[in-house]
Length: 336
Image 1: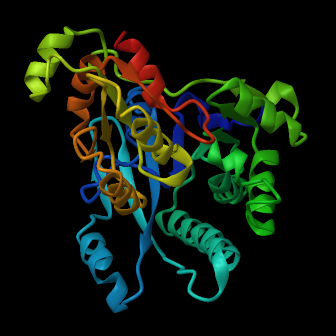
Image 2 (image 1 turned 30 degrees about the vertical axis):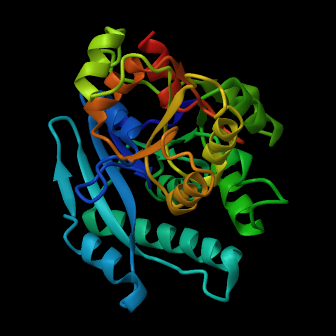
């Protein structure tokens, strides 16, 4: 299907990605799996990555965010691809509600991306949208340049984006519009692929491809050596979580579990690597239950350090309430 839509320039493919999660100087840990994939894809063809980032209104409550984003460059050239950072006005919920904010954000993303593409005269031969709602943006760009669209769905974009009881009508419509406009759809797990097919997309257009990872970084290492490098106790059972601290990830469930086993002699300790909106609540939960010696929130750690944490632990836990197939699972399995 893709080949039937390619132009005469298919011998020199020019791919445009549309993403919202991607590493940048202000947030180097965001969407690292996308950067790993871009590094490889860009070695095979010309690749431009359009990263949609929020531009905050000049209000006092957003002063810190504006300061951070003001120094973000318009683009960064990497050895195999170029990342373009497009600032899109941020729509706060305020009293208008999340439905209005989400709908307005999607429309602003679409308009900003269309104008950006036209001003630069870009005519990609393939558009690749990452997460379902970005497929709406990608679909309109693809139509304007007569190029095929590929969409990768990760999990929440299908689990929540098209759920009538959770998402809003416009997000659902925009996501489905993008998926139905896609020549091919990639799901990161079998369950995600099944949910895409359940929306009416032909099975022939849906393929499962899990997120990749760097095998030169994630491989089995000595547990004792890894603990020594990280300054961790050698005689403790260590449970590890790596990911964002947001409600869907279920870190509160892990804290509740450790509260129940605190009385066990020589019990395990839990290290949580990552950060997110729920961090303050989780810190309070740990303090209220006197778990400061059992549960540790470490914040973000350098990506090159993550393999050491994975090799240092006895048990890796992902307690997500809803999930696709996050890259961290492949990485920790590669560590043995």
